Length: 529
Image 1 (cartoon, helix red, strand yellow):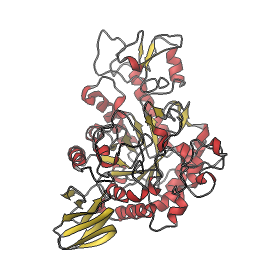
Image 2 (cartoon, rainbow, N blue to C red):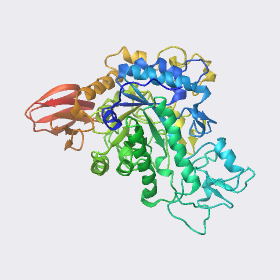
Image 3 (cartoon, one colour):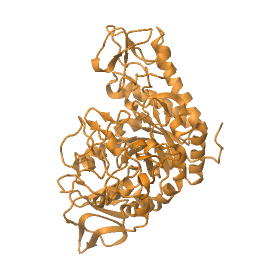
């Protein structure tokens, strides 16, 4: 079974630079068969909405066969779609239907570990000398990452996250005779795993997948100071992709674009748990919590207590390291982190955050439902490993809210059978309601997406120059377009020395008499005359 071959595609580095990505959490997006869990056929039925919104590519969280101890990030079979999401034929139908609408499909690939139910692990757990995984005859360091093996082999295996996720062996950058489980990166086990990565990716590339987001990309080679060996691994894989599948993209969950992009990725995500970038923009210390929470206010703080300085400092380093080589991806949220609408922030306050995301020279990634203002829902029970210590990720994974019908149009299943409860708020937004209201957040986002796509100066390649760093945040793109963003409740004023501007997308911002005036939670995009 092979997806239909079309005309030669643009190189990945080209199409990705022009894209707006949309992140789908599969069990929560659209249920076509009434079992309470989203599926690929449901997503296919909703592609016209995504085309209307203007997105260019969809990234799906893992949809491969899994035990679902960690929401699909514990893979049992990399070459088979999880039955609850459909079949491989459904995946091809989705890819082809999306392509017909000008939308690419990217899958999530968990490269660093499998499920303990994977045939590779079952074989390794009972076979001394099989080193596809990392084995020790004693509890090693760090202790919390080693799990007793119940197979014939005995001993302990190293896990990456939960005990159900044994780490694949890609070797250690540093060896130690006192720790014989450390193998070099070119040992047979690591070589077999590198070869398997190519086989998995080739399988799905040949079926029409346009790229992969690589989960925990930084974690493959262990004890790797400066990620030197890890970078070599990904660099070699990128060379292979450029040679065999030049139209396909490689994105990473690394969180350090200044390292990941030079290592070989087309793009790397700013992440909430690495560095200050996401925190300093829209983390208001509500919703998901974790050891990374620093308690400092963000720029899009309702009361305006934040600063753009931490983000700009990080951005300048990233810009210098990635220029001409790849992109930094900026998500509105993700399946592990609070939505934009969270805590004191309501959906009426987040349009300027989208204005920033869609006019800054990063790769914008919209998390499903953020465009209508879906909120982080607190107090939900754990679902498939979503409660990670104190981090309640389930609040960002609730069903997509399509309309005012039962279960918000997500599923015809009985309410108790839903994957997660629908947001119970009586004023919850829906796609249907937002489409019917020209003043809704959804229409703001759609207009901004459309403006970015028809204005190259607002994309990833034009230079950016900051004119005013406080409230409002004011910057030029390519010296031809002015952007003003005020992320707080109070109005703000900034000096501005420009001969004249023409409004393109304006919400509560005025430019006149040598200054710019921005109402609370406002934005403006202007052409410089």
